[in-house]
Length: 409
Ligand SMILES: C[S@@+](CC[C@H](N)C(=O)[O-])C[C@H]1O[C@@H](n2cnc3c(N)ncnc32)[C@H](O)[C@@H]1O
Image (cartoon, rainbow, N blue to C red; front, top):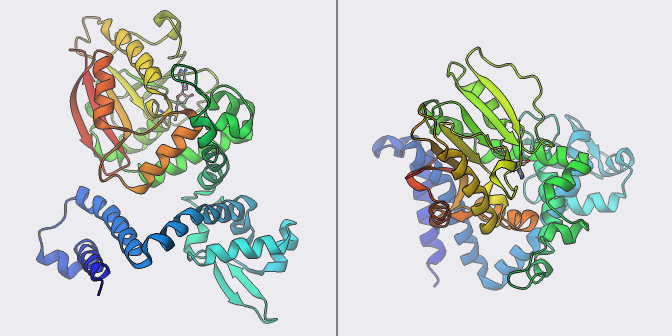
């Protein structure tokens, strides 16, 4: 008899009890907050192991390959706005089909995939036809839900999915040493970086911006609380700071801290609406381009005490990351007497042996959208060292992101 499923299920039960069962928790040393965070992903892993053991290689592999169909069903139903239409009511398939102007057959097939995963409340109505209403899972697909993931699902299942399906030709598009074509270029028929295309396709750019905020909310909510941001010396140059989502989160969490930020980004991205700041908190802007050939053309502020790069390096290839880091090194090595020891803070996802599925699938997305990837800590440290930096600290957080601190030796 194959005992593997029983062994995995026992491990799973023990871990679930250790994490959630109050009676077990009180008889054991309590898990640290980081252990509680990790145990959620260990449970995810064990569930996967159990499924693989129970189904066996053939059925599991087929299931994994077919999961792109479920992803498409989720994207279709969400982007169509079925959860928004249902709101707090219940509707039959033909009512949904009439209201949204789509063929009922398409709705039926897609909803059938999602109800199996627990999305929507499905019932048999008075006329014998099926009716649908929102439940806890389908509600997060509504635009108006306080922690909506509608834009994240739309972006992942549209640009993300289409781009990833072009990885094979992209991987063969350039001979060694030649400029490589990125999968998203092949999928959507444009040349150049995604950010440029998004600034022309405004609705896509807006959706991507919202998608990033929603995904941060899901996987990086603790980045603000788990790192000692107030200990950083201001002004902080936030390189590729985007629409200032870090600054907004910090204003909320540490309103008393006298932060001074300078958001450095390309002019198309800097769109800071009037934000309620505390008396101490200040945000300034510097438009520039960290990809410029010559340092002087980057317009990076020089001689500041703290430089921050958050979620930027994973968008670029190794030579491009080195190019950016060398410019940052030059900016930091201009040292006015007041800031003798400038610090570089990297806040990026790092790939570890125990990294969970999201970190690995995001790396596929980064690769297909910009030719970037999620790097291991060692890969990141090597790039920093090649650019001239010394790494002084690496900190895990209860988040997909980690922090690496580096200085000029
Ligand atoms: C993934 S976003 C990260 C935004 C922000 N750091 C955050 O964590 O929310 C990458 C940012 O890099 C910026 N960027 C891309 N190319 C750039 C360049 N050549 N020079 C400066 N910023 C650039 C983009 O405009 C975008 O805001």
